[in-house]
Image 1 (cartoon, rainbow, N blue to C red):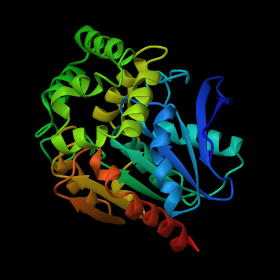
Image 2: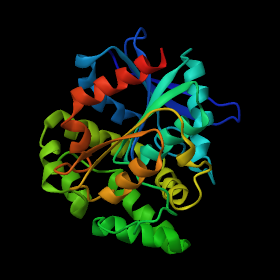
Image 3: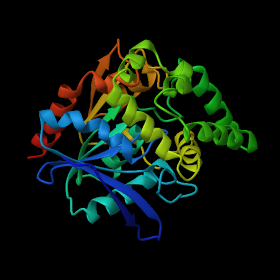
Image 4: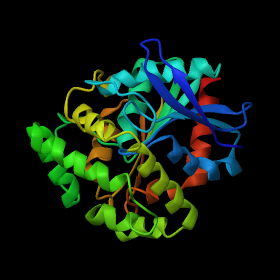
Length: 297
């Protein structure tokens, strides 16, 4: 079950930082970390091993950690990186899991990499920026400010992300909750009271900014511009998980995805937030991942 890290060269010459967790005999699960994040966050899935035989694979998305930047990337760009990494590990069919900012990237795999991608799990994912919802309504003040600057673009947005990146690069387990400020409801603070969860989350955020802040910047731009695919055309199974207490990605996003993806199954938990939506439902999520593979047989 050891967590192992690798550096992989892409066909275009970029480097991808990748990691694996679990036994090679298990079902392949490709994990897309949140925004910000890195490979280290995949260790959050350690508890899933109790409920199934999984082989988790992940990367630090382009620009995060030790992964080279891909300037101008859209959400769909991740699919080529996923196939590069899975080929490196000689893995075939897989399910995609995406948390938060990783959610759209998991959906990209479901849309563009089927039938190799058998299905996806979306955990507190954002909806497309052109969805018919008030996109930032219900977000904490930090996210409202960040996305307003992202939409305006230019030096003020770059300066903002550079400041965020400097703080994240030095975040500690002692100040991680303070750093996220108004984005964490009480239910998510309770999740971070667990020493191991807080340790993994903190290390994952910090490592994401090892070589600068452009990964976070590129994620934000990708979210508010066309994704490069239409999520409403996804045909493989998608489980959409969301909670009403979420201050990073409000429930309107999950509700939109659940109602507009024809293959979606909604898992709406009113009392959950951004972190608790997975931390309090590990067994159910693990069984859902197994079900994706069972449905493909």
